[in-house]
Length: 333
Image 1 (cartoon, rainbow, N blue to C red):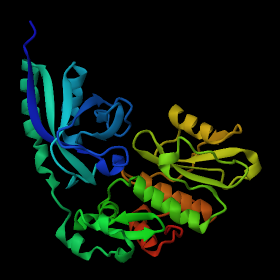
Image 2 (cartoon, one colour):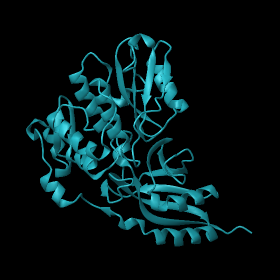
Image 3 (cartoon, rainbow, N blue to C red):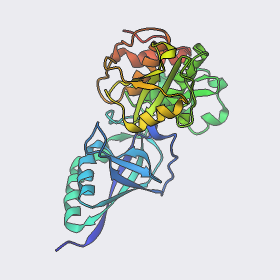
Image 4 (cartoon, rainbow, N blue to C red):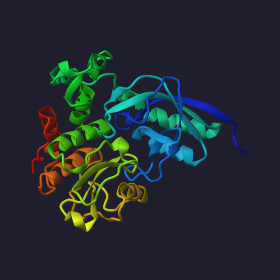
């Protein structure tokens, strides 16, 4: 005989806000749904958090296996936003997170087991309200006077770090790079804007928010960073092949194949028929958080006619230097 259905509330967070912040703005009190992400190749127990059918983050890995198995058994988990963004000490997922209350609903006997497992995880102790004070004091702010005053009114953490044209990055974005977090769309678009100013004749280098509406000419040099597989960055380019070949290379720092959704996005970008190739010799990253850094480094190498080869441990410090100098140069090998 099945037990009665009860609800258990557990304080936790939604990880990955720095990746998905361009997709949504959290509101305290709103409730989001959770579901297993069975196609996640980084975590077989990943649990995605969704708003209106769109992924906006993930549950912490410390509790994802428990939550995933609970969902698999027919349970239900919702996320109720309880606070503003904050910094995480968990550098595996890293960056910014949104505090929430997990609303866990299921049979009483199963809920009792879930309670025990979640308490053992002790996940809620793994955050800090602000980044380390030493980093905040030493963070170099570039051209603050050029930034809109409204950008600085929310807090010191939202002050301008560096700006080029209408694109800017805040001190928050610098902390993400320094702490080993996954780069978000603001980092990628700032980098592409710099590259566009250095290589104005190149097709692409447009905002990733426009990737579903881009129209590019394969008969010219093309370089474009795309958002792929819900939480991944890749580079699409016809370099270094001849422009007349209508061949597009997908430079991917993790995968050796291309999923159907990404293939469709690339196909829609070009009006003429193209051949999509994934070079197997592309340098692969170590770990799961450097795809954004790699995509910027690969795009930079292609445009500078340099081989895609660099030292991963030096890439983030080089990227910070390039952003501050407002010019992307080949990454150190």
